[in-house]
Amino acid sequence: MAHALAWAGAREIVLVDPDLGGPGNTFRHVLGRRLWLQQKVHALKKELERCLPGLTVTAIPKTIRGAIAEQPDLLQAANVIVVAIGNHTVPLQLNDMLAQDKTAVPVIFTWLEPYGIGGHAVLVNYQQPGCLRCLFDDHSGLQCTVEFSAPDQRFARRDVGCHALYTPYGDTDARATALLGARLASQATAGSRGAGARRTWRGDPGAFLAAGFRLSPRYDQYVSDAAVALEPRQGCPTCGR
Image (cartoon, rainbow, N blue to C red; front, top):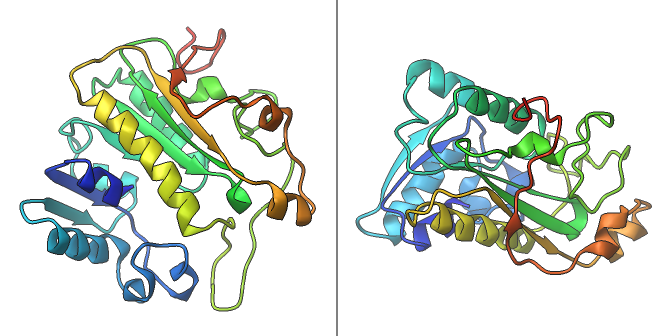
């Protein structure tokens, strides 16, 4: 996502991530082996500033909570906020906080589904109805209604050389999702602050099905990756009041 934004013309990027790179990231991160035993944000800063003269990258090796605790105005100072975290818990917490504050900065949430079956990017304008939680079913926990995987499945795995659990996907999947997010970022910073939007791409389900997982009806109902409006959900506990 950082690469996509940089090549889309961003002049300043602030990276917030506490993680260290390791062997398990080799085929899932654009820096490959160069990321090993380095803070991800510092490694990305070095790479992006080397490739693109005039780009300024600020690296904050902390969680978003830690970064905000040190710099309370960090998010409000941005032109656009991108939340690219591999689980729904923290993004939903951020969504609720930003909605409560009626944040004026447009926010893009982006994430991947396992085994390359798809990726999603959602643009939220908290000055208008509609938020990330509108895409979730209150009765099924963290199941997102626009995802291609059926609910109540666990995808995390651990491979040799990877010391943490992760959701399987490839670098090409990450790049495809990042491009969706970058297009929404360009839309958000073009001066138009209208209603929210979302974009999706759908991949081949062969490996997903071969691993014994189930698709949701949404997979067969998918039409195209064109942007569609983010529809506010009646009764959404975050923005539906």
